[in-house]
Length: 426
Image (cartoon, rainbow, N blue to C red):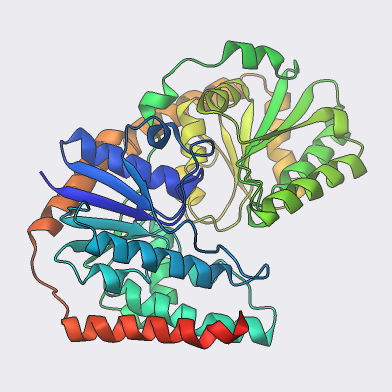
């Protein structure tokens, strides 16, 4: 048995959270001991497994700020994770052999103060998730970006969620040519997907022959407006009597962007006179998500260069074809023309693919059946579990690649130096 501790910044609802929860469930199914430590966990806004006690969760450092004067999100996130890492190292109740951390690598030097092995899961380089629109923003991000690169290289093992992300990892972290990240695809929770749909919820869905569905967090990078504009073109071509668009997404009232983008999308729908033909849902349950995917004609997956994306896999498993942007993770998950369509991220291209389902009523069933078979063959829980367990068990036994405590303390000092430099900005 290996004792695995998962260290995650914010254990809410999202693809990254789903991935680490599935990893914990996989290890637990093989009788390994697992627990979570996080800087934030809200029982009213989390996955069921962390709500009902299936997975033990310890929340530390939530009193630390998430932002200062509406800024410094990254720095605050780093401070919160470093604080949580110190808690993991010094707390006698945190017994572990391997620490599985993700998203923020700045905590790794602290974790190396213990004898545990550190496994870092890189969903995507954090430095690529923000823009540098001003000199001050560039100046602010420069040391944070460097810190991300150096500390990522200190992990005993690095995992990525797709071959696409592995390529981006190599291009982004130039100094880590010696690091060979292993690909571990996130997988759907088959047990959850096999549960019954919410019949009462299904009955309340718009009664149209063709329901097009978007499932993404309410974030601008998810490009949900593309689904709205493509739907407008579809309406122009086929009329409004047969089609309806449902936009469902993770939503957190604490997150300013969630609130702003939700309003922007509502305003766009109003401007296009589609208010009665587009339904918005926020923070739905797992049963409602299954119901949506089981009822939809197809899923519109609009993010560009998405590093993986678990929703297309969940959709295909529930026999819901996928129309996705032809970049990033969907290139590895969606079979173009067989389980859905990969399109340029333009309204006319998405609309053309949507029209195929309206014009051929048998297409949904044909592509849906092929999608489920593809998921079973390539993204099964069994394959995921075996691969992850091998990695964790080998890592727990491997005592090589130990880093000098002096070097660790040097890196920790550098982390705190960066924080001190930024303090006057506060």
